[in-house]
Length: 329
Image: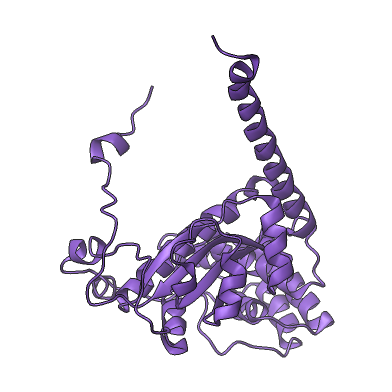
């Protein structure tokens, strides 16, 4: 016969799990309230730049349609002009402030907009704003030949050759390779092209150990990892209640892009889960210089593979278990 403890133990365990879940939700909710951009403070250069890219990307999309409505985009044009005036006033110019100005200039110079009085008024206002961008923004012509440059002759060979590695060659991945992988990774899509990512990298043994002691899945191999990258998302980039989960999506997309970028350069990796308790998240933040508005998505272990390696088979589920044709009810 079961004792009272044996009877109650599963229920107590479930209550404990539920309470930990609730505490985790409250912690993430509080971080979203404290650090996200829902207040839209235009004096904050980072927050204003995220908002600027949200607005000017809407203009870019408007200009990219082959058949566009001739009167579309003007609401965003005026919002963008107001943002640029604020940037000029506060004198804390960011990358997307400069990009926004170029996009707005392109918009008012469209053939259908050029002679409008509103375009002339915006042009006069922009002439008083002296900062500019040296990069290309707006829209470009993109031919089928350009697209086909990225088509792999044997995609299966690339994708099926990647495995998560937990033991690496005793060799640090050089800084220039890390930077090249990150540059490739920056082509990752994000909500309204806001690119809310921030990556923290180290190959310092003491710093790696300080970070990895708070991650529970690296115990047998953590001290031998050559490099680590902590993937974070800047909460300042998110402005509405509907976006309270968006940062997990953008963070996951960037993480996978980074893993494949590293693989394309011959660098192995292993994503290390950061679904952890609020207390561990706080402890890590006290240990290393992660900005308070950056939410941690995961840690990625990085290194070169040995000549011979052992990896988990990690069999994939049959396609018919994860695929359904979408139909109306």
